[in-house]
Image (cartoon, rainbow, N blue to C red):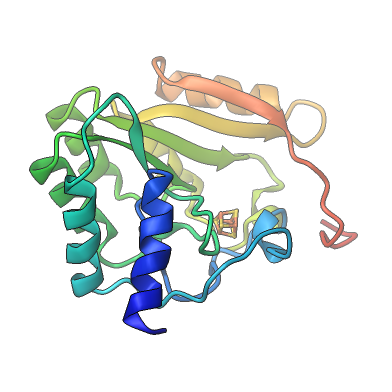
Length: 209
Ligand code: SF4
């Protein structure tokens, strides 16, 4: 992709307060319910894996925005395909740099690829600046079928066992699924918000799942 176009895509994302990192490929987590199996409803660009040079451009641009109460968001880009951006090998380094060199707030979305100790240490070091929306989805027996490549339950619970997570979202997949997850999560973390609901059935989800 030409640099001029790439920077244009970055700028569009940053206008919406997105931090436009890219894995340079479709999301390897392959969740059965992922909305990004069909991005036909909006225009997306095939952006390459974010390089150090790209990051320096992005960070410099972000620093030129005034600081307000708004949050800069990692996850759910508008002009780039959604992926779990914490699979980028530099994502945690760049998150630390963002917190160090800017005074801005940040919102993170991930299914749990932030190393547990590191993200909880960062939350302690920068209180009030990180809004961490952890997509637990389910801790029950459907997890492997819905998210065959997702982090383990143990990893998710270790992330929850600390100050980092602001809200944990998870879903009803039948009797005693959502309730059981609510109990388990709140035993580990009594502070985070529990964000519950039903997954929307998607046309391309396979019959067995
Ligand atoms: S981790 Fe997120 S972006 Fe990746 S497949 Fe799962 S739902 Fe989609």
